[in-house]
Length: 382
Image (cartoon, rainbow, N blue to C red; front, side, top):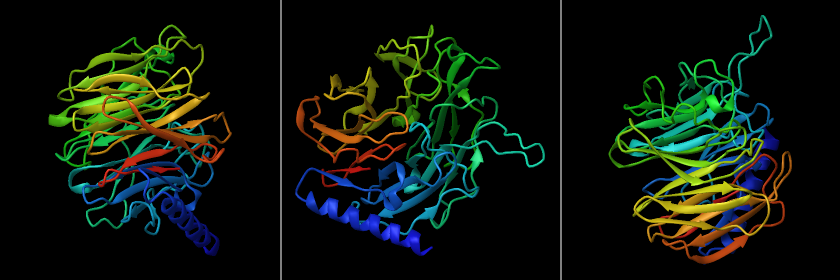
């Protein structure tokens, strides 16, 4: 206990120091408490930062939740997210927990779970897609539950989004029926209309035969009027792994849009990020080791932002002025650390400024999270 408290205090001190150095800057870098991995965060209308992160054994660890009232200068005491300890996984970077804020700022969390082991046979079952939310009092998380009813077969990461009308969407990719090939994988989503109290059985969002890159992550974004956007990487013919956007105006029928082609004979373990802005929505993704970003709604553009090598795991944020911040990790390989890199652009994609962290400052198995603050500044959690 004393050691954990020391780590928390050390992490908070680091966060304060890094933030103070950039008080007048447009972008500040904040370290995750407890040296946590794979931060997922959002800012509510009151400016409170809500953050979920991973701690423990990367093969089966735990999730923590904290709040910050001062834009990351300090955080609340960590709160356990799941009841079954060791049920979250960090290996592979793409399978981390996802946080979303719904109606009234309620916190929702979803993550790829570790398959439970039968105590009698010692055999593992199927990997669940676990979901929980903060209780009505905001003091603890409800017992987690698997939202998948028929289409298990998780590999890459899932996605989560919510809106102010009480809709909560959890999305993932898995095989159609009993098929095992990546060409037969489809994007599925389950929707709740009552703030996550219940979820309808999953429905397919992607067309049959278009496939999904098995070990890649995806992103989800709730749109106005019950709409939904999903970004993922398709898989066809063993080497076509194209960044693809699915958009539905009503959460029912989806249209598909190609963002970028990529021919690769292996799974590329990529992720996506989506964010709403004043004029539509925006996204960031990986394309052949580069980071690309674009306006995907009313404002349309696509830009290549990275200049380094092996750039992965982008996160995008948009402030009230329409400026975009895209942060990513450079130089990270399997089981190695990487370096934070970021670029700030205007609403048309023109570069405003850029920067990078210390060499190898992003730990093994981790990612980064970009956030826009109410005063127009940005924070990057690493």
